[in-house]
Image (cartoon, rainbow, N blue to C red):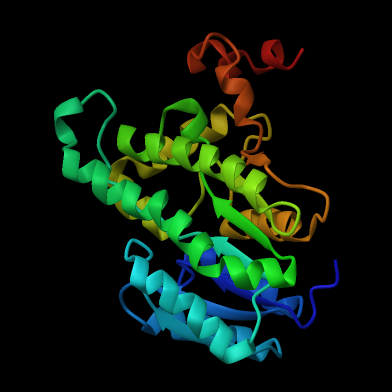
Length: 270
């Protein structure tokens, strides 16, 4: 696909995967709406970098859990460009709670996490539907391997991403033939957000992931951005859940028990 002259909204794009995606799109000639829900300083810095690449970029502060804010994002893109080719639903949230600690999650925690990770995605697609259909555009939802493995920062987070995977397939069915909808399922990503959430456990978790991945590596935001751009440009791909995890899938090859997986890596790869 020739990306030049196209326009995109990337939610949660002031840092991490969202920022890397916005910058990669800008390098390919795509104008970008940068979104943040809190401080606009980092978002403005990302927008400035995008403009240095020779495209239009601007910031809109909005919370995707708020339906009115989703509509406002779509309207901002329409007012600025009169079109929208790509929507990357990257905004996400979680609560870091050990899976064994069921008492650490309340009903409100589930509501808060689903409101961004799942409902927010639906609201964004609905708000942008007319623009995307008119452009025969594409949507990429940033999910997680947690939605398949039932692991991750918390059970509520994993459940929200599992629901997002199903939502992606449903949207692909109902928005074809005009709009393609896919999801990226990344593994462990080196970001400040994850480091802050895991705290002292970050380095141990990072090394454990590397030990159970076929490639022996974790992901960078740029790795994810490359995969997102691929899905945006893959004109015959829709309704797919693209897992990018460095070969982590093999770690659950033995009845879901990592200690029986890549602890004997060769055995799983036969």
